[in-house]
Length: 382
Image (tube, rainbow, N blue to C red; front, top):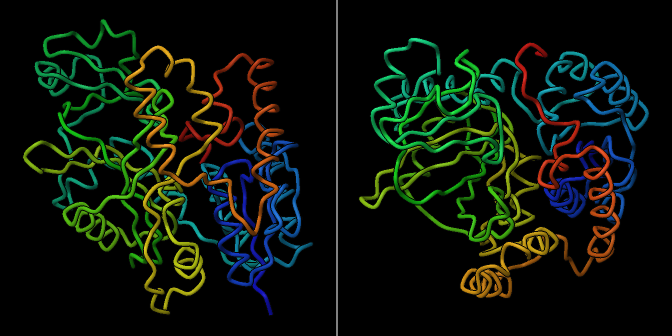
């Protein structure tokens, strides 16, 4: 009998990647989202779709809707595609009464998502991270870090949102951020930013994909290139083993000119590296933790075409950047395209039109639209 899978946040490209992979493995795939129009509605890999309340604004109603889907569709496994995982974790005990789920406990997710708590945890494991501390009024440690080039970040954020770079000697109080512990100050590490995405089964690293964002829209990558680095892979393996993590796990790293690596932050969810993993490997890593993964190569490059198109105004201002972007796009696979599932390639236009309409009505940037209603920023909700 086919395993029945519920995917959440069907608007994000990673949900489509999951749906195709799991359907290819013989699963019956159901997808839910709080937007009335989302990309997985256009995929033949998806058997049923549901519109549910937004978890951030209506967590209680969201829980009721998800539980109703689980019961009605006789779901075997719940798989989150984005930050709604934090809201699912709030009622994981209730989910467990009916089916399994592919994510860690709420306390583990929270600890990894909080940038300073993650930094402290990795440091205690003997793993390399930049010097960092909470930004508090009168903190001598924060004052010391401010004497060299540093970075200010919100403890809960994503996609490079509200990151401030400052030169050594600049008083953090002049950076217009609160000194209440909701932000951190971190030593700035010069080098190349690299990213990772991993599938983890109860402390066992199933598969990891390292990549570099070769084209970005603001701070968000829209073209990705597969890479290898044994030092980063060993770093991730050690963290996974010592934390006994379960679910999807992603990191941002900085690699210096000397080859040193430092983990900048952790995202306990899917990131764009999922688009570079072979579909058969991805599905088996989720479904069969005890079975050896098939030996299949990862994809070398991937892109989100409409994301690139959204960046065109910025690209036109720099011919050199535009040429490099065009070259990367020609070499990369569009994540929406699949010969066996062509409709999402066109259906995404309808989704983006809804995104544009929503952004104009709510007056927030397009880059924030994908996370509207599913992002998680406040520890008091867990």
